[in-house]
Amino acid sequence: MRYNLQLGGNILQAIDRISLILEYLATHPSGATLSDIAEQIGLAQSVVHRFLHALKKHSYVRQDSMTKKYILSIKLFSLGAQVIKNNDIRRIARPHMECLCKKTKSFVFLCLFEQNIVVCIDTVQTDANVSFFVKIGSAMPINSSAAAQSIIAFLTPKEMERIVNAEQLLPFTQKTLVEKEALLKRLETIRSEGFATCDEELEPGVIGISAPIRNYDDAIVGSITILKSKITEAVSQNFAEELKQTARLISADLGNSTKN
View 1: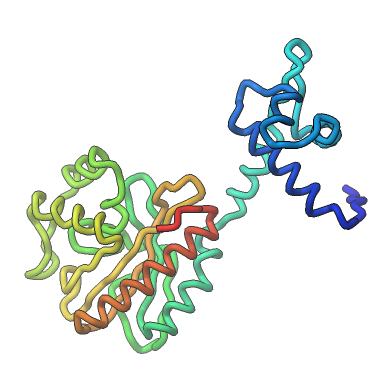
View 2 (view 1 turned 45 degrees about the vertical axis):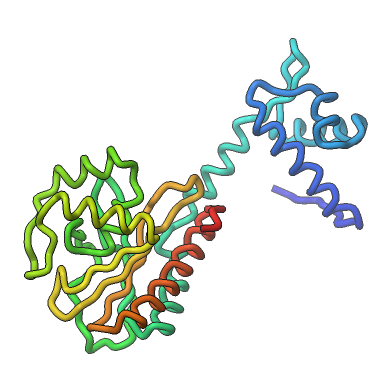
């Protein structure tokens, strides 16, 4: 495919105007007339018509022959689907994980949430001699891992209860939560604070801090977690803030626009 685009002084203005047209049509699935579009975005009909003609030519917009309304075509969906397909969370998250690892000098791992299972898909560590229980492919138990709890806590209450009720809450250490009511209460706290902490609940002497990762439509798709030997409460809070910021950056790279 050849692209013959002459970058004149008005190219950015043209892109802005095309964006306004596409975004307006996206909110009007049944279509909109030329006059409606021009009035709503504040441009002359002749200008809007010129851009609509170009969009029709490239099959991004179609016009209903009866109503004369302009409607977005399936081609835009196709482009969006390709972007989503190419957005491999592991590839996107890796540089952020490495940065977090250097800042906190901690073991960092990435989990994916799929079919009600939380699984580790990547790890980064500063010291090859330090070994933790988490390996790529490890499934995270919901009652003892921050990685799983930071995901489950942000599901709908109905989904959260269904997953908790279906899980066998096995003890891994003396601190592991094995009562469903206690776990549900913990998940409520995590939801309000924005991150999860598990202190020696899966492995003695190890604290895990985790934050959820969201995709383009604000759905929880995974979590990023740091593991550390016992640390002070102040250090834990600092790490939590670094972790939440890293989760926000990964989410943004996945197309999420949520500011919190």
